[in-house]
Amino acid sequence: MGLTKSEIFTDEQNEIAAIAKVLGHPARIAILDFIIKLKSCVCGDLVKDIGLAQPTISQHLKELKKVGIIKGTVEGTSVCYCIDEENWEQIKNRLNKFLNKNPTENCC
Image 1 (tube, rainbow, N blue to C red):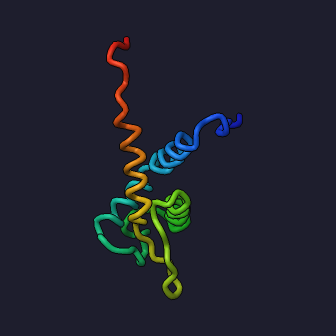
Image 2 (cartoon, rainbow, N blue to C red; image 1 turned 90 degrees about the horizontal axis):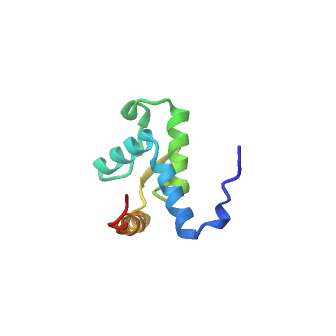
């Protein structure tokens, strides 16, 4: 497998790519949808709500947390997850800025 040569790209390009990669899995979108619909932290068992195995859910939560979309706090023996609202706004702004760029009109 080759290297991505991420150092030749701007910080913004690398950040958008990292966000897109994390959002590129339907299970992560389902987890985010579930957390957003609750409008609160998720402390319970996502396994029965999402329908995936616990290790799979944990791995997806880890990836979402790594890019800052969610944050987790320890409460007793469990970790509660919620949307990191500050980062959520930054991510929305970054993606909107990128997606709102106008491509050339006289192409193909």
